[in-house]
Length: 87
Image: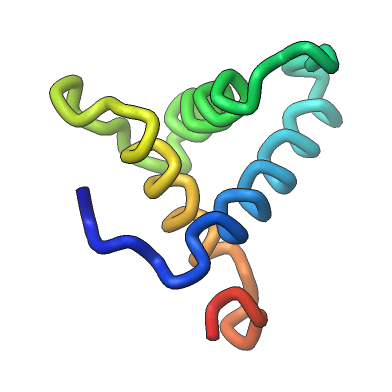
C-alpha cells in the first residue's frame, strides 16, 4: 500500500460524501440505515471505476485498506488546493 495520507480518514469521509451524494442524485443507489460503512466504501470505489474516474486496483491488491486509500487520493484531486484537509 502507498504511504498513508496525513488526513486520510477525513479525506475518505469527504470522498464518500461527494460520491454518494452524486450517486443518490443520479438515482443510481439508495442506502438503508443498516448498510455498513464498508459496503458504502466498496460501492463508491466501484462507481468511480465504472465512471472511469479512477483505474481499478489489480485483483491481488483489492482490499479495504487499499480501496480507502484510493478514494482518499481521488478526493485530493477534487478539492481546491487551499482546502484545509490538504494542508
